[in-house]
Length: 389
Image (tube, rainbow, N blue to C red; front, side, top):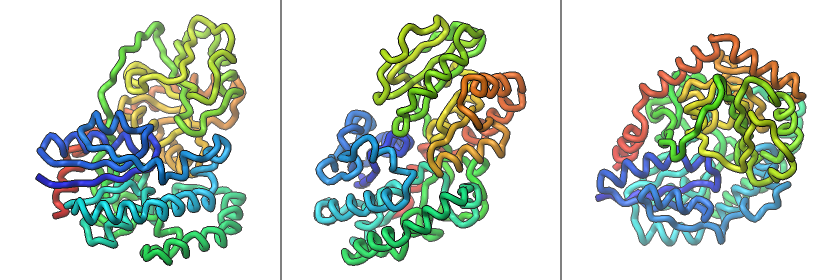
């Protein structure tokens, strides 16, 4: 029986893909400890892992909603949060790993404290990448505007100060690229297919592309019309009341059934009386909806995009961060969706109509789905982890 430790950040999109891997490891008789945050406790424990709370040390969950929305958009701010959390956790996890003596550490690519403690203590390490793997080749898809480039250049002095804070504590980090770029020599699990990953052929044999980890649906969704349109802007940057109202205006009285998930930051009462064909919820079982959906208006986070494509559902995309823009660009390149250029009701309706009236979008989404299903999945990820020692 092996001892395996997972580390992750407090984000559903980074946690969910790992849960099937944890279940697979536990089913094979291995023990798993999972360092995460109380908001993820129930789903982690249901996978069979021993949950270890990091809430007392986490910086991101202490942010105001306004500052929380900066994560993923402001590189200097995101770097500071990662560094603050790493240094706060340093003593705790070093002491606990020395006592536990795990056979392997698996850490999310953004949970740099997991990689750091593995290096310090000489523990076999696997990076868990729930976004696209990132190197100088795949970076070309992350098209940045001139304004984004200028903002990044101006933020470098702040970033450099935070990198020096890590170096003083013995962390082998040279620059910000060590935090966001995938090391060719690091064993890495990537939760997508070689076909969907940009430039997958440029990554070393250390990388294994296992496909998205899609859980079974837990609810049943009734499809009441011929076409079902699903709308969700994810779980983080979703305070978008004007967009949601425009979506209601776009589809009110149409031939489409519309299910919209708006999160906790928008009160459903603000929508007033809804048309009979439109349902609005704070949360839904996304898998259950996508099993029945015909189109998905999405922020295009990696998890949501992968789940949509897994069920052959083409996307209408409105990315909010550079990472999401990269995913949207890849979906667009492969012909499985369109980018929403404007957010008025007419533009929204026309984009959905375009996707639904051209069968190529559905066909291309199904091609990506076929690639996902050919991957090794959770079993392949578990095999990678167990091959480390």
